[in-house]
Image (cartoon, rainbow, N blue to C red; front, side, top):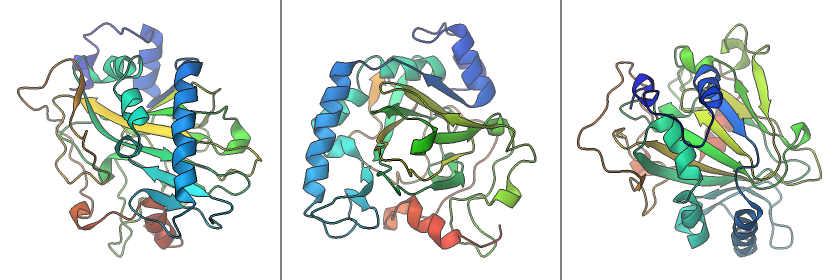
Length: 298
């Protein structure tokens, strides 16, 4: 669904001003949305899976490991597709109020795409380079929204999400370097001229939702604090938005309508989108691509 069509519907969870801010800036933080009961359930599920990672010596289809990971001291970068590995994560992804929040920016009919749980382990959790999301998983329109949940309090010292205000309205950067390597990275020299003035730290207490437009430039710094920064990320779209490449993080729930009804026709934005590599041959995760792209000009 296109933005102009979404705006024909009255928001149910956000205020009108909040929704206007999301479409103007490309991001939004909503504090105190998810209650303590949900946070406890999600933290318990997370702990169970972190415990399971102790038996994993190297990254696999579930876990992307941080440097220094061991059975004695687990360190994770990502739990890939948490909805595939613990029922609590799917229960949450398909629940209110998160699907109602998605509806306020996607339209009344909402479809689930994929999920991930990105950790920033204390005292060294890795940074994430500037990038757009949508070239990694292009759709027929730009309705996809990533809704992140801070499962613990997140301040500036913990490596919160950073986003460039208004960058979603500018042309998309290529996620390939000049040698044709997929890097999912925008070098600082290629960032918009006003990017530093428009850089915003998306901090918030536990229970806050962080919404990211699929085109907005974003990233994060390393977590050098003594506190964990687990960020649960679910991606939704309008029901009439159709992915046209293989989902890099597939799950049994890919394409499930979580609110409203199934679309009977597709929506198409006239702006095209760069295509990623063929993920059906395997997806190694973003850090490996970004690390390979460091130092290359784009």
